[in-house]
Length: 132
Image 1 (tube, rainbow, N blue to C red):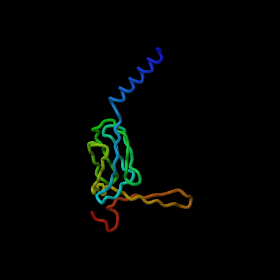
Image 2: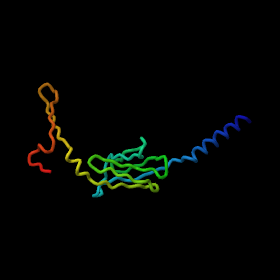
Image 3: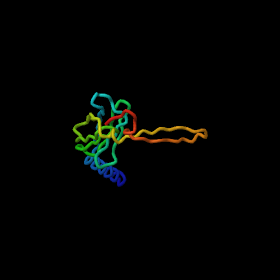
Image 4: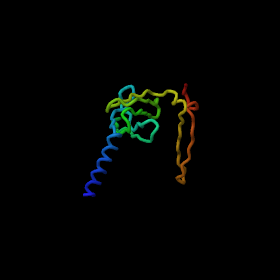
């Protein structure tokens, strides 16, 4: 009888803990201004390590700790966006970050006879015919 009673108490305690902080599932899509999906974009909950990456079609799905979590979406070459989670579906449309193009660098690799790679790096300003 004591064993049955303790099992019921434990199940009830877990039910209360789960009811206080239920997981909230959020899904959505990440695309650019032209509607093209952004593959492997990063979506995280602001201030936490909770997050995921988009799939090949720009879709994502993961569990967030609160109903009103702030979602942060980032992708190389695009401006990072933040939205407050509204409902289950939250889509992002990212805009290109033209200022990040100025900081890019070209790296070229070349193999010598002994299969040891050598490389050189240049900034866009050094490219022939390139203008800002």
